[in-house]
Length: 379
Image (cartoon, rainbow, N blue to C red; front, side, top):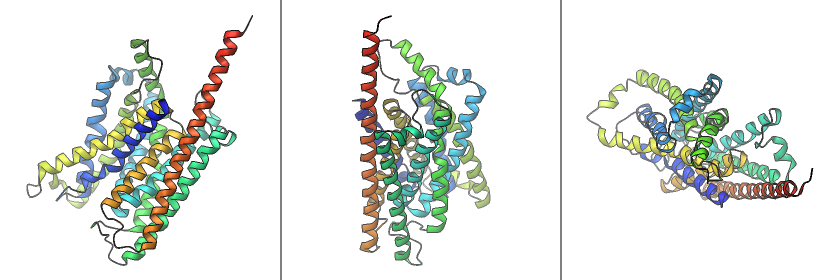
């Protein structure tokens, strides 16, 4: 049951993330940097502490009592992730929701799954999967197969992007009316895909804060045997401070360079509507982390959780790409190529899910053996 709930939570989070950019596309009369930072204030400053306040009593006390090393490393990962989030927005701007999200999040899946497992191979920690586990067990090989499929799906989607670029010719605009700049978009997508994985590293860096929240919850609920569903919300607050820092600085630089500070008070634009749309987009952006935390509580912050969550975002983003008609006006061969890419990513989701099922099944069998031995041992 825990695995099913974990998959469901990851899907909801993936839907929120894959859909968050839709309200931004309805903002009128504002420069990109203006609507991005207004939405970001909700994503990184307003909603995270509100969510933590509602789910973790005394969450600020947990943060204040944490060591400077934990806070510093978590914040640093947030800074790096912030660059990834910033370039994510630009990548989607130049590649479209469908193609941009597929490439960015596929790369994010790869690095978010592989790097922590390598780290824990050299710095072992109880309950954390290592690269040796992924290559040395049947369930690990299944997860790795899913990861390989995900990368293949990215390559196919990238190929479809090149074909789309050729189909559009020199117009630089797709059927959705969006800019399409393949080279610039791909560079931004690669940067975003690598650095966005730092969010997963940030959760690891701040894991002691989550553990403290879990212990407090268990002490208050002794009858509960599972993990606290919202334990990661306190970690998100610190990570997203880092994300806010990076994005705020860059957007202010763009506001100054493009002389777009007037956007925030420009009565010629639908101000109230723009602010509400940005608030909606920013809140949806945060909900991906909220539900990722819930899914991670059920499945663990290993390769399976990360790949599954990213894959769902890719699928939802591609759904919106179809709705927005981003692939209208291209050849049948181009459409077939992107469909094959999406289908490959769907297969990767199923493969990773099965690998996680085998992992959980093995853990339960080992727990039964340990319990049996402990019950029947003699001194």
